Image (cartoon, rainbow over all chains, first blue to last red):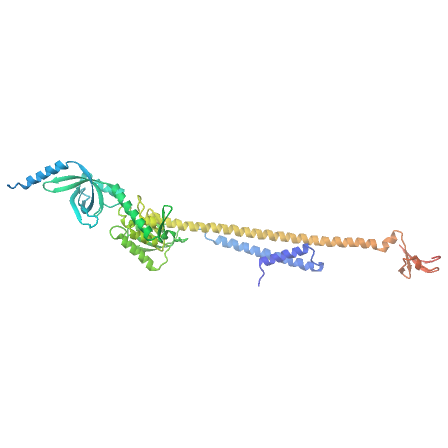
Length: 64
Length: 400
């Protein structure tokens, strides 16, 4: 099952919250930050894909 | 008594009648029959009758005529009432009595009164409406002075595309309606099934109701029935004012759009159908406009969809950017925190490091490498070491 945008975004938010609240042991920090960065990349790509699709679909709608 | 000549009798009759009626004109109510109309020559012969209201038997019957000088009264009457000058209609007539020894007794009609006929029509129409409301309260009822019918309350499809057309074959109404529909500037497609019939004259109401029945039995789910009649004829609305038509239209299961071409009065069909417009052209225009409104609402929805989708994506992007920025910020804060912590610990450690203490001039007293902290443990003559900043000195205790 592929991850949804919302899943990724929620996970990202949780990670940032954890780091912010210093709940992450230092040794785990690089892993967490790498994961957070991957989640951001995923979200950006997903968002860009949706934007592109939206442009195509909306433009394809017959004007009249 | 010796016989007199027929002409003498005729002349006497003429004199008597002239004496009695002369050039006097009087208003007479009578029913028309046996009309011989010569529009080209501008005169008309007819028979006027009075029937017993109960038995319908003729109680009086006189020949009548309209001469050229008053011939326009027929056209005036038809224009004002919308009723065709025809047999078997009750009229209020201004007449004078004329007698001719050769042609006999004849009433000359000087004027036909339209308001009498209009009043009668209105009364008949009201009577029909009253009995419809009384006999079919489920189909026709009054609300705040307006007639409401089951047909009016039928839901109107968002798009009206499949149409059953009731009209006269090859008539102006048929042409106008089809032309207007086909020429619509938006390129809408309509599927029109024609149910052709006479729409005026004797038997028209039965023919029209028969076509409505055919439509019902076809089982085709038409979006609407268009009933049109045109060509500017203002006469002969009788069929659209009858009980049968009113009842059929009010209770019909498909919305009926009427464009039966009249300007003066509103027929019972107009009153009780789903929607009424003046002409066949307007009926077609109504359908096109109805569909255009649907398209318009689609376009508006499309625009809202576009804006809402864009808004949603903007929000998502903003949120993502904010989280990215937050990640950067909290990571830096995390590191800063750890660094500060380590630095503080280092300072503390530095303070605690004995070499730093020695540097300030203090010394440690050791026994075999262990720090001595109690004077009582020191024995006389004992050998101890003194640790100073730059080295160790061995000392002997003189006195504890």
